[in-house]
Length: 412
Image 1 (spheres, one colour):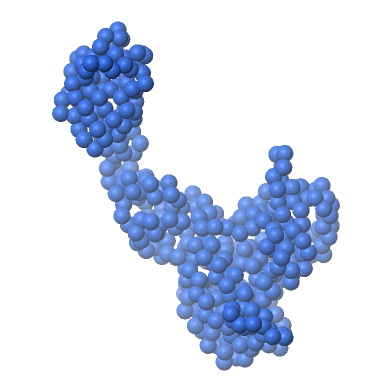
Image 2: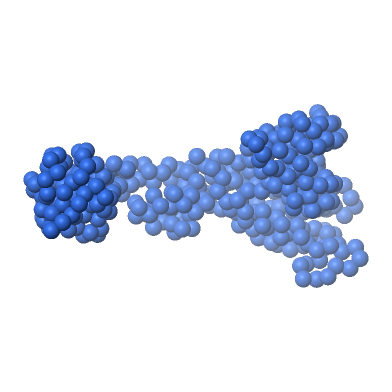
């Protein structure tokens, strides 16, 4: 039931992403599609613009009539949302507002600032180019054109395009429900005051926030106490969701029951432990039903829990929601102080990043012990130090990525 191989950092993430796939589609109202990924191609029901219109407040004219600065009688007025009752005939002009349909016979628009109006006539003061300031029907989007392809992340700009094309509902990839189960007799709920040996169940809230932050739907199942019946009850409840995340109880202690109970419940452990610090004591598994649900057993230490979520769980959730870019991109920064580490494991170092004179500079955000939450709060980036290194000197370039992510990574 269990593989005990300990993969390298990048290998562990590759294994996880190979095991998960995008969920099925659902139809939602337009605004509810923000931050989601399209599950179908969207075709324009009509052209944009749907009629020739003015891009300026001014006068609809014939360009051929504007070469000698002779006054042109203004024979009509057309506002946005209206239409002219007359055509532009040779030697005439029609006053027009931005967005209004260009009257028949008119081929150009002269802005107010390029003309002088007096006594019911207008004199054009600057040369007029044919078709200037006219937006032609279909010049942006043609009727029947695919305006957005499946896989596109929906941002406010895509919302604008969808609304312009009259889409009230959009078909998007479904968001996974993510059950969160904390384990341990030492945990108390928020609102209680801890006594000696007790700690607040902060991981439940932190993981729920992280799940929400990537666009998935958290379900806080509660605390599994350190006995088999409680674990069976809570983990079975958690497996009703699309994804299960557990916190703590995954190491080798007498009361670390998570892997044992997951096995009883039909979860095959794909790997246990990763060559990464912090976060070594995590496990990843899949339910044995088809297509299978991913299960992440994360360490109980808050720093380890959050960083393993960032590096391993978030990419999986993003893939399940249809995103094509799941992993935070690495970029170079110049280290500002020496860092020591043990060779053999990739180290995830909490750093404070600043952009100074054309380059990123990285400072340690504080003590790097896995129990120090404050340095995670102070950090805005993670330095990924290679497994083979045991020392990185100030002045060296290191690879970093931003810490935390909001809904809507690029899905192009």
